Image (tube, rainbow, N blue to C red; front, side, top):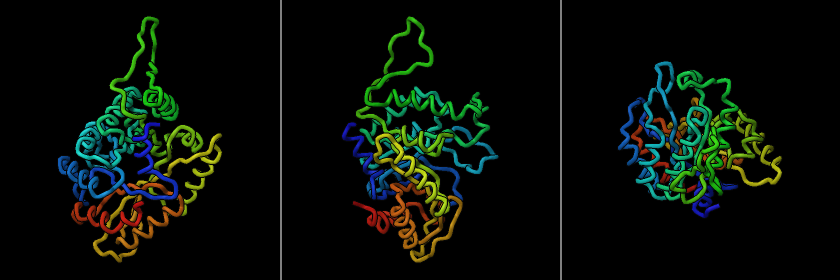
Length: 313
């Protein structure tokens, strides 16, 4: 594997270590309209302050029935902007909806971001968790698991060490296709959620498994299941385990942690304890979905000054 890609992966996922990233958009609680020029500025700040990854979601459609009212930019457009305004931080999709996009379009987008970012992209892929969107895109939700596997194989073929285009159909007079420009390095592919697959399938095909925060005992059980799947591989090796966690960082550094949906409200002392426990239990990366009534820049700067140094190597 190309050294640039290996360096990016190691900076985000490394055995025995924990790295910290941020999930975009970075909004103050109650604000559901993002100023994306400001988001790019905050991303550049996170890069300068030493966060390891910026995560971008793929939310193709909004509905009044959905709990998330935020309008998200198309992920490829936003990732392209981030690639041009950052220099070291990894860029990750969390996650491109593999089942609702043509896999060759995904491969083209991923290769483009890898090229613009000089090898800093990690392609997180999910199957989507909103069944009505399948109907809107003319897809059968019952085919989600099979679509995920088939599309994954097509993307992997296009982005691997020996890139090749797997066409849906190949008439007798069809030419051989290629995706150009070729990125500077293969694009790492990461499973975000299960995509309807077993942990053994994920361990065989992905650089790791990214999942939502859960109550600690449940999370420990999921991690044990993951480690067992990794150990069952024909050639066991490192496979990452990461968590996306909501965080309301209190202005009181000594405030104890209180559970929230998909995360915690906590002061930085309690946050350090939570993160240290996650590291000890085998988590390699945590991306923080910030939700606070404090100014976002203030929260980012506090995390950089008082939390990141404890996990920096």
